[in-house]
Length: 149
Image (cartoon, rainbow, N blue to C red; front, side, top):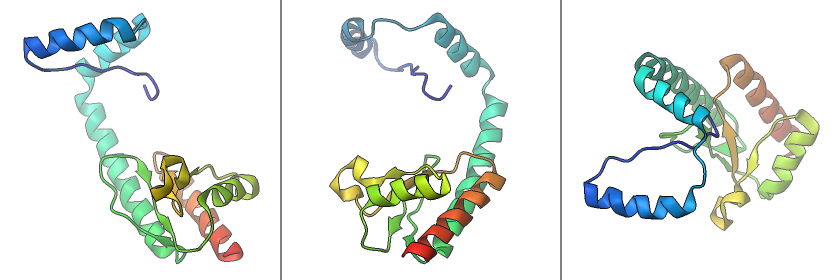
């Protein structure tokens, strides 16, 4: 359901009433298919969550290991997401790096500058793919950085 916005709130009734007043005028449609998918997910998520949590932990550990092995990157601890946001140990802007990675190696990253000036000299990568894909991606990222910087 990535990209489908669905949520619920557990709060005292007076808070819920205040939230309802805001939502009533800001949300115009909560499509029935998202409502049904949300309901199904809430009722049947236990085994799925366990499986995905294990996959994402494995992927996170792999991504962190590979980032630490690449001289041009500095690893940050990764908590609560399927993205890594390593610092580039080279003096090059993140937009240029992301554009060249996409153009030359078909690796999609997000330039850190997209997150504000403190994100400059960083790139955001996702590790939500299969390990085989991550291996290829990190190998190409390392090759690109060694060759160009």
